[in-house]
Image 1 (cartoon, one colour):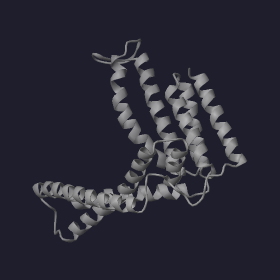
Image 2 (cartoon, rainbow, N blue to C red; image 1 turned 180 degrees about the vertical axis):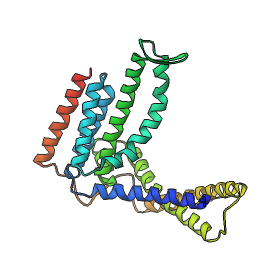
Image 3 (cartoon, rainbow, N blue to C red; image 1 turned 180 degrees about the horizontal axis):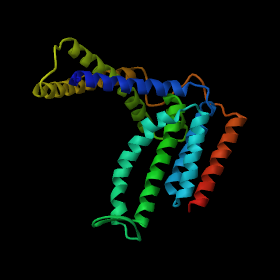
Image 4 (tube, one colour; image 1 turned 30 degrees about the horizontal axis):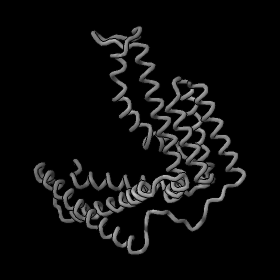
Length: 269
């Protein structure tokens, strides 16, 4: 029997909650990157992201992607999770953008289907674009999956990221879970009061009404929480119980990140 709209929505919300819980668990495991100081990790992986974006040759980007895979394995992040969370969505969106380049870029043809011909130059350009996006997204995911979110925000403040930007990132991250929990409660309540499968018109009416109620609740809650935080002295700064302390191993990681980024920039120039 085909699942109803409410059941499919509940399944999607539960999957999103499981994803968030898995990300939090990965950040607390005893992997290689999890033990690195958050400041060095954020700066080092961001430098690798810049190197991947600036590289002009596919072998250099491929080496950075291989390094990202090695870091993921050392951090106990299974490739299947990266494939589901990062690689597939990035391939879909970036591949859609890169697809026209296969046919409109001039160059020697490598395949043809009637009036459409794939050029070697277009194939190389599309492959480089997809490889850059996949590598950069994988490196960015390593930061989030191996570092607790408050530590990421604190590291951004260390690097003089504006307080407003950090506050927006922090509140957005928290409200994602608040909205997920609110929506899950709403649809569970609706399911307990629904008998049978709703008609298409009723499903559309339910979706529109649920979206409106969820938006109203989230706006009211955000205003109340913001006023409460301001009353308690919140001004956007992120405070942790434990201060950052770079060890000798962290500085070794810093040197490794710098060498890898410099090598990728030199090779891919």
